[in-house]
Length: 218
Image 1: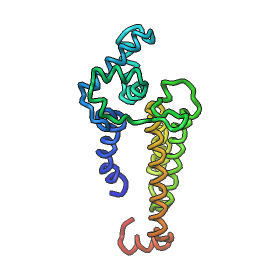
Image 2 (image 1 turned 90 degrees about the vertical axis):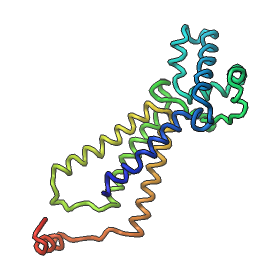
Image 3 (image 1 turned 90 degrees about the horizontal axis):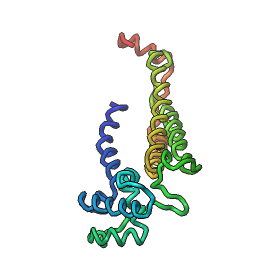
């Protein structure tokens, strides 16, 4: 109830948020799916004519995400050509994924070694690992006499889940990794405040044994 149930409640929200992040032209700008397909074809044609890609198939593969399409639409000549085919673009406020010199639409696995881009998956891993450690500190843990096998499995999961998160962040736009990292920090802060407001009672080993004798169960 305390572990998996809250995660199951959050899952539909996380999945919906993922769709919004990965499809901003559709869910943030409100463009129809057909309009987005037209924009993609126009940009593919521009790149093929410029000699960036030899075939439309190669260009289409390179422009496979809406986040990449938005980055190209910020180029005035590209925007004008797309606007001629999709007039509703005139009423759209395009998101901007740049903060100063950093482009958070980039994906670490697709752009070679860029130090700040590779640092984000590392921060996601460290943040998840640290938050797991702190979460265990701020929540009730069974006594040391608990099943050792379960304890070993928990230790493995405490490393595997952060590794998985870092791996996913490595293959996703940097903005997703930043969101994940900040969300982890907020969760730790929330747990810290709750632990101070409602501290966990400290129960000695003698009190545990007395309870076992009283109720006839472990």
